Length: 262
Image (cartoon, rainbow, N blue to C red):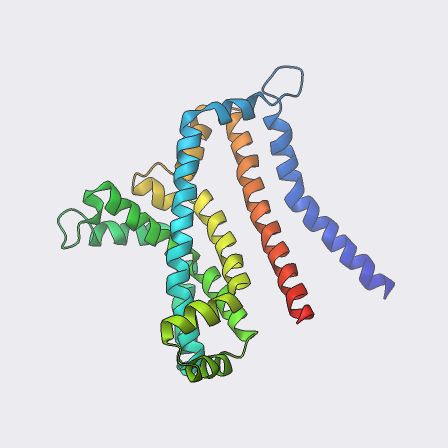
């Protein structure tokens, strides 16, 4: 028993070193902008850059719209598959996994090919259309995580009984989804939303090839022209990701506490 605990702690320590050491090295380098002393000059330089604020705000707005669109697509789909089409579940799961095996560069070239200015739906011809295209691309990349989070949430509730009870009270499908199903899987939707937010903030390929002012291309541009600021940006991006992971854990614990209370 003690031997198992020892190996568990060794594995945990190895994993912590594997992930923590590069991050600590990046953090230490980002503080060396001033010769001979540690300082926050690189962070001040990054935060004072108007382009940083513009690109970060743009990515945050795109992340919010992506989460809304993803939830509107995934929640009804997962609910309907679980309620009426359980035999289609393997097919839907396979489709939702495709973004993990299809590189983003293939997806974005497909978008450009289909929606260029000479096509029937020339989304790339306007700024708004390109933003919509980018948001749909983000929703595609986050689909595997959002779908699994919502599907896991639906497993914890009796979808059939809740639907029959709501229908017996005269509720329509939209009311059932909005006032019965969604509140019961809200924690799962939030978990998927935090992962989606982290993906959108750090994504580079789609935004770069669609020529949109997102945070990912800004990090790449800064990394090509400056020394210490890229390390500061990497620490900020890591921090955003870990904050999202922490929020997922917090939401999960809140969910367990709520279930236990019931």
